[in-house]
Structures are given as C-alpha cells and as structure tokens.
Amino acid sequence: AQKITQTQPGMFVQEKEAVTLDCTYDTSDPSYGLFWYKQPSSGEMIFLIYQGSYDQQNATEGRYSLNFQKARKSANLVISASQLGDSAMYFCAMRVMTTDSWGKLQFGAGTQVVVTP
Amino acid sequence: GAVVSQHPSRVICKSGTSVKIECRSLDFQATTMFWYRQFPKQSLMLMATSNEGSKATYEQGVEKDKFLINHASLTLSTLTVTSAHPEDSSFYICSARERAAFNYGYTFGSGTRLTVV
Image 1 (tube, helix red, strand yellow):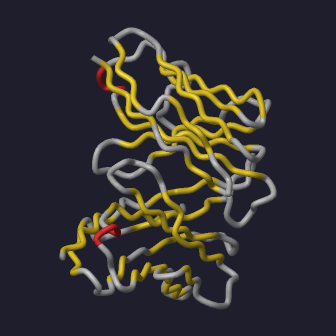
Image 2: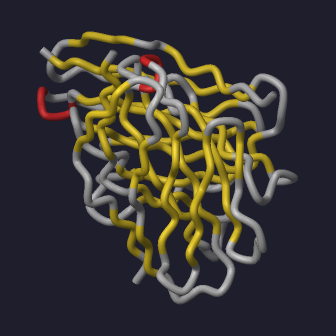
C-alpha cells in the first residue's frame, strides 16, 4: 500500500535561516510523483515543487529545493532564506495511480512552520 | 496559469438543510475533479474523484448519498452536502486536473469553510 509520512508536526525557524521539512514515502509503483504544497491560514493550497520518480536531478523552484533520495524513499523540502511569509502548513503529497483517472494525490500529515524575526 | 474558482468561501447552514459547493475551472478543461475534506490542524482527506460525464468514485467510508458530486461539464463540478449536521462542519476543497498536464496539473480551489449550526 502507498503511504506518505511527515514526522515533524511543527517547527520554528528564524528569519533568513534555511529549514528542511522531512517526507518519506512508500510505494511499489516504479512511476510516481512527489509534490510539496504550502497552506497558509487562509486555506488555499499553493503548489511549491514537483519531483518525478524518473527525474535525474533534484527539483528546484526559487528558494525551494527538493532533496530526493530515491533509495531511501525520501523527498525532503528545503526552504532557503526563510521569510516571515513562509509561516504556514506544508504538505508532502504523492501521486497514486488509479485505474480510472490520471492519478490522485495522497497527502502526508503536514508540518506547521513558524518563522520568527 | 490554471485557475479553479470555488464558491462559496464560507457558508453557515442550519442542521438538516443541504449545501452546494461549486468549483469551476476558468481557463482549462478539468477532466478530473477531486474533492477533499480537512478538519482543523489535519491533513486533506480525499472524499471522491469524478471524471467528466461519469459517476464519482468515493473513497472508503464516505457516504455517497450524503455527499453528492456532479461533474456534468468539463468546467464545473459541484459537491452537495445533504441533510447537513454539525459533524459535517469542515473545510472542503476541490482540485481539478487537466488531461494534458500529466506531471503537474493539480489546481486547487480556495476552499469552502462549512459551519452547520
């Protein structure tokens, strides 16, 4: 069965520092995708970064990078130079393939990040 | 970029009444729509998946007679919470997928906060 795990319920980070959010996954499918989303208190889901299972390089998007270690089945998100606006809940998600659609997202429990001045 | 408009953003209803939530894809064809439910401080739980023109596929434990999903067109999907009770109070959020965007393409609505009194 597919499973996605975030073990850090909450983290404090100081402004301008980097923070790493952990995510591990389990799947027997050779083809899968991993996503990170940010959810501020307003509730909207903001897409941050995507990593495909066959991608050779780690994904990067601005201040966000994904540390993809396929053998360890981990896909940690690194946020560099944290800003106060980065305070939010962060979710790791895995695309789980289904027979009747192009795949659905399964989410981890989330990590609440609070950036302090 | 792709935008999904979700309405209403907040709704308060009396116990026993029904509430309809709409999600519209504004600039793309949403071949698949996902409906999630989220309790405070928790993760997103997938309720159902619907493909345009066909019946929704519900996740285990989700009452299909209580949460009616309609996906009659490529740009509109609705979730109706029938005979709502206080325990149905939650944050509901939709996500639309465009067929052409295989690797990415999960666009979320802004969510609906339902309170049943």
